[in-house]
Image (cartoon, rainbow, N blue to C red):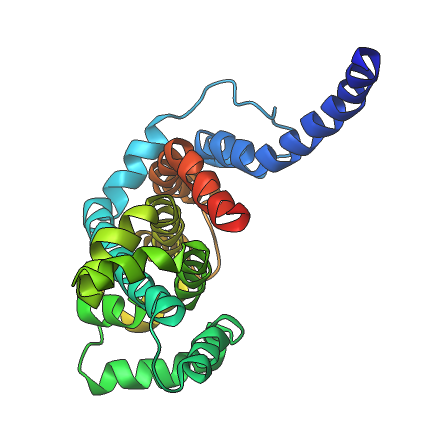
Length: 274
């Protein structure tokens, strides 16, 4: 048995190392390009690792664009949209799983269809509605259309189905209201799911490019992914500056992913196994 396990590790470790190197290679290329001089980026005779790293590229890029404003806009948009998605998903999941009302299944399938229809199909009517409310180039226009998540509602519905209904029935017999049963009994049980959905939603909102591109039209309202477009001209691209700007955008989300991956795994595996 021991020998078989050692042989299995010997066979799998090289495969895992190769796959890991392939996955890391874009990040490695971004970092070394960000610290290369302009003349060495597209010079294929230049060494892969720069002999004289230009760390000043990152500081130069920071001064070229209002990254402080971009960071503030991204934080406001990501935090508010994530909070909205988590709260509405909790309420919708609980209602679809534990509350009886007419047309519940039909309404759930309508919500579920949101997972199957790409945003590009509905983006024109969505933008028309945002424009009708006068929310173009405002935080309202960025946040309000993103406060609902069909994926989150589906996850919570499946989770609340796994919680014994006797808990809610016992509280109901004791006189607890529907809202109190939801807040004090079911929500505390869903903490791992809440942590996982919070992290996933925050990452998705932080990296969202298309919707902010359609809603905002001034530098003052740009979020970080849109700010990268300032480093691409119509005919030329300074790849070292573009990669330095991308590095500034990626580092915060990389740190968030590094410290919260455990919550994602715990939350999703709990919902899948329980």
